[in-house]
Amino acid sequence: MRVLARVMAGAIVSLAFAGGAFAAQTSGAVGSGPPEDVVLTVTIAPDGSATLSQSEFHLALGGYYRFDLVCPPSGLKNETSISFAAPDLWENSHLRLASVGDTSKGLKGGGEINFHIQGLQLREIECEGLPQTARFSFYPMKKGTYGFTMVDAAATPKQELKGAFVVE
Image (cartoon, rainbow, N blue to C red; front, side):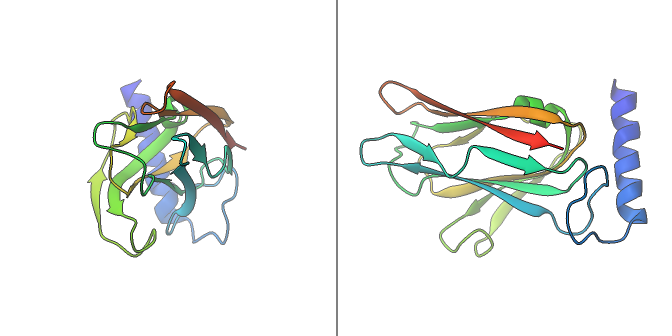
């Protein structure tokens, strides 16, 4: 399995360097250039319930994306968290970079801390009281519909929202 993963990663890198820049994400073609931003904003209502900016994302097979989980700017307290998980998407994607950044100046306005990942599995992203954006960049490598779950552990009762990434 690890040999296959290394072969796939090598093929992706080779294709990215060999191909020209794509104007838009094309299914089946490995994306190059900057990733396309896909944004999920979590907000907390005055009653404590969480909402998502959208519940479905359509992606192209092999496209290059940067998923931005925008944590709520208010309503959270330390150790009461919003957690996000998309294990099937992560398992069927080539993950490249994870980062955390300040959203006070917009998605591209603040600094961020980057984690270059290769061969590691992402399990969950949590927002714990800070108005930050958690991001990861990736190439979806297999067609399918991959569910995601967002849990608001601070809500009473605990709230669970679901959505999906559709890779075509």
